Length: 338
Image (cartoon, rainbow, N blue to C red):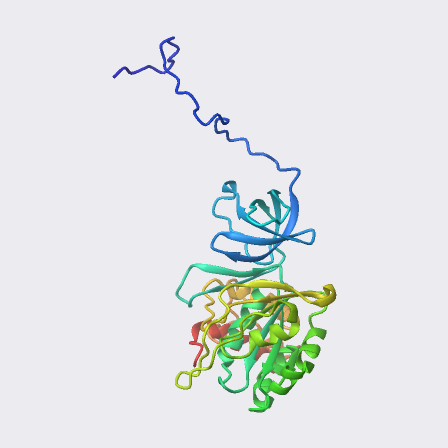
């Protein structure tokens, strides 16, 4: 076998022909100046359904994006066949900057975070008051994820015909979280959807909740033109519902009043990725009190030099607000069923 030196300029060097007839690879990437903007509606096995100028277009991620993944709610730039016709496929070449991100991990020991939805304005936390029983730790975890990701929380309590919401709301009144209480009769006649819709106007709202709480039933009432399969029965032994929504899906509210993102039911909401220092941003009345805290203060009960105690004792904030903050910060160290 003949070996060449550093400067192989001999005439007998063989050059393999390009059988495909395409251009050789280059590190110069196209700018895709003709790309059109779109919004990701759902993701299914590498295929992304996007809304582009009123048309639904199926696309795949371009290779040059590497491991960067687009999720529901992302604004993307798309090239290729944008007709939306059957069996056509476009390419996503850019993913826009996200103004908010709802993330979770499988559990608190899992370092791999999953982005549930991007660019949502609001997180609707759907919880049943009975059948299945409410899980306050689950609500706390969703609140922490909302505050960390830049979303405004909304508490939606269902099945008030089976149990009173008073005790549960008592724990969240100091947080100032807006809430809506519904029952099954209101869901059936549409009154529940009307009241919830008032809180959704002009916003992108992600709905999250564990299985069996009536989340998808509520979404179906909000967007009747795009009904999804309702949640399965609640297991009498475990008190948990069966997952029937398997992928996140963005649905437009009637008359262009906003968007609803229905997410799969979850049985856990891990917070491994949460930076506790960002949760304090959701408590503007307490935030000034952290100026005297030592560097790296976690602001929880295990931080003896935390300046928030003196701040509250001086009458600058309600003690119930500090208790609520520390309860949320502590939820990362607790199991959801505790």
